[in-house]
Amino acid sequence: MVERIEWQPRVRPLIGAEDIQSKTAELGERITRDYAGRELVLVGVLKGSFLFMADLCRHIRLPLKCDFLGVSSYGDSTRSTGVIRITSDLKRPVVGEDVLVVEDIVDTGLTVSYLLDNLQTRQPASVRVCSLLSKPARRRVEVPIDYLGFEVEDVFVVGYGLDHKGRYRNLDFVGVCEEIE
Ligand code: IMP
Ligand code: MG
Image 1 (cartoon, rainbow, N blue to C red):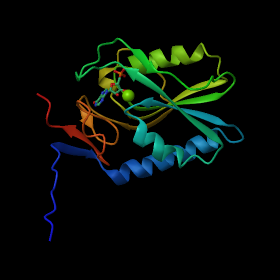
Image 2: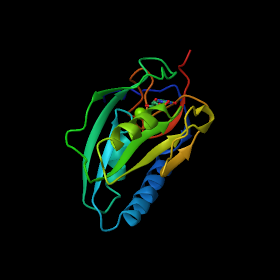
Image 3: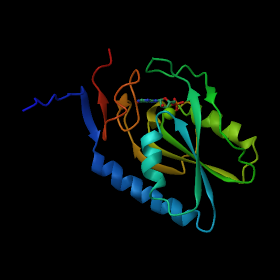
Image 4: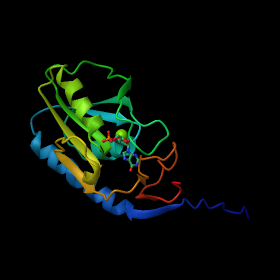
């Protein structure tokens, strides 16, 4: 028999996989109701939102398109530099479209604030924000979160798309990273 190698991530669970799945379904239902009769463009903010976006879009029963924005604000640090850069742009214009930005976490708010300003200049019909997580204690600019999964304390969280130095995105739960020095 081949020995099974177990990987033990040093992550203290905070939000379980089932809670994430039921919240995602609930958000999808709300979005479906709110945008009934319309067509959506989901704009996932890479890379952190990729799992959330994949699950969320399957709970939205509307015609929709998926696009992605690559944004960098962090480097390898756990603190925001406050300098936001678009590293990969949308593949199509969003003029006249209903845009829903899909984020993993709103921390200082600087990224979403920058993205909202940037997207508004492209003349969409509307722009709203859906974020899996929010860390209100660290907010530096107020940003509207139209659809929110969970609030978290001022701790660095990983899993379900969120990383520390590129790792832990593959966890199906969100937890506190115990590897931070
Ligand atoms: P902002 O500070 O609101 O601009 O957040 C920028 C980005 O930092 C988020 O979209 C995340 O990708 C990342 N981030 C913020 N807090 C955390 C965290 O606790 N864990 C992992 N990534 C985070
Ligand atoms: Mg992000």
